[in-house]
Image 1 (cartoon, rainbow, N blue to C red):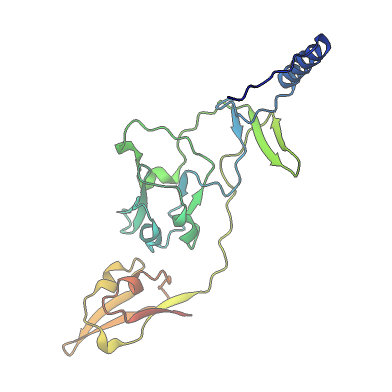
Image 2 (image 1 turned 45 degrees about the horizontal axis):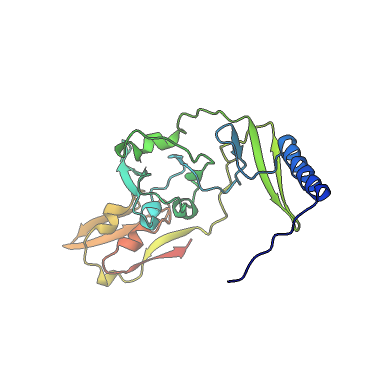
Length: 243
C-alpha cells in the first residue's frame, strides 16, 4: 500500500493560507460572484425569444388550424367561438413549450412572453381557454433586481441591477409572406365529399348543383391561403398557388 505524506506547513505558510481564505470570504460578502439567482427577489434577464406563456390575439387569427396541426404534444385544441370561427386552447399539462405554434402562425396571432412561473390549483385548470389566452394571467411580482450573465473569453461576469425586466415582448411585425390561394388542379377527380367546404373558415369554398352535377367553387378574394382545405382534401386535388 502506497503511503501519502502530508507536508507540515510552518506558521508563516499557515497564516498566509488563512489570510487568503478570509480575504476571499470578505470579497464574496461585498461583491458576491455566485451564479445563484435569489428567486423570487431577483429574476434572471430572459431574451425576447424566450419560450414562455403564450398569448393570443383573435383579431389576427385567420382560422387556419396550423397551430393545432403542428403541435407535437397534442396540447392545442380548437374551440368554436360565437362568430363561428375556431380558436386555439392550450393544455399546459401537455405543452412542452417548443413554440412551434408561434413559429407557424402566419399573422402573429400567437405571441410569446417571458412569463414562466404560472401556478395552477389542479390539472383541469391547466387547460387554458381561448378567452383566458387573450389577457395575461394575474402577475404578482416580488423581484427588485435583474440578474444578467455575460460570458467572455476569460470568465463569467454577473451583473445585478435594481430594475425589473419587462415580461411582455414588444410585438414583432409579421414576416413578409407571398400571398397564395387554393386552387383545384383536377376537378374531374373530385368526389364531392364537401370536406374542403366544411373546413374553410373564411367561407371561400362553396358548392352548387346544376343539371345533376355538383360544382365546387373557390372565391380567391375571400381565400386566406391557410391551406387547410389542401391538407384535408381526400383526393389531394387542391394546392396552393400564388395570387
